[in-house]
Length: 343
Image 1 (cartoon, helix red, strand yellow):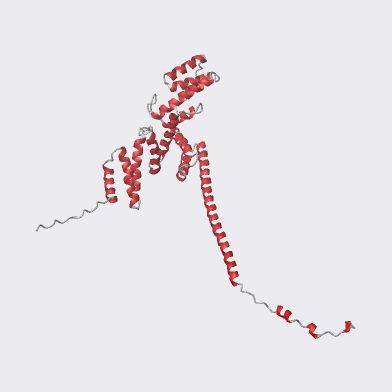
Image 2: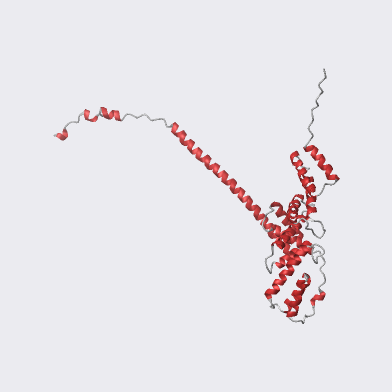
């Protein structure tokens, strides 16, 4: 009977409490929160883009430097090929281009010196070697030849000492090897210094020949400070001369170094490093006067003054100096004072 009891209508109606719970709740506005999220996202994107831009700029600059270095390295390799093939003019052009782009590029300055030495030596007529093709055999004992070489060294006759040492080596390449090597070093080192300085048996300066002798001497032992320094300044002199009438700024910089330490160094022309440095200062000052800005033009006054400190300016440059000095330092007008009338 309990299962058949009629269901009360009140049991199927929701209670007051449940009605209150099922009412729709008010939703808080989310627009403000959405804008904050959007701003954060936009800021993150902007920061990422800025970082990427800077990274891209850095990568591009690094790539550009790498490309330039690679290009100069290729030019150096081509210059080496031209040098080995005997195309010295081509090699010189490539090396001068490299030094113009990067004066400190590794190996370029040294290779240019080698090229200049070859260019200076190659055009010279080579003396005939017919008599030496079939030399008369030296039948003297090794001791006698060795003693003669020693005598030439004592007399500072470096050329004959080297000739006798060559004969000794041909006669017996194993005879007193260490002592003969030392004698070779002494003769080559001293003849190289004499050729660079124009002293001793060298009546005329021969920078290229001196560099060559010192380079050969270095095979037998390290050069001392004096000879190594002279070789370096001889190379700088040759490089500076290669820019003559082509690039006065470069020529001035190279001869400034030579003038500072070896002012009397000269080449076969007899022109000293001092004279060449002074002349490059004058010519570089002329270039400065062509500048558009007055301050840059006025810099020529200091350049010409450096030349005048070495030797007084001639009439032409005295006139140039005074005209530019008037432009750069115009005279100030002195106010005139009217006399006070006497009562």
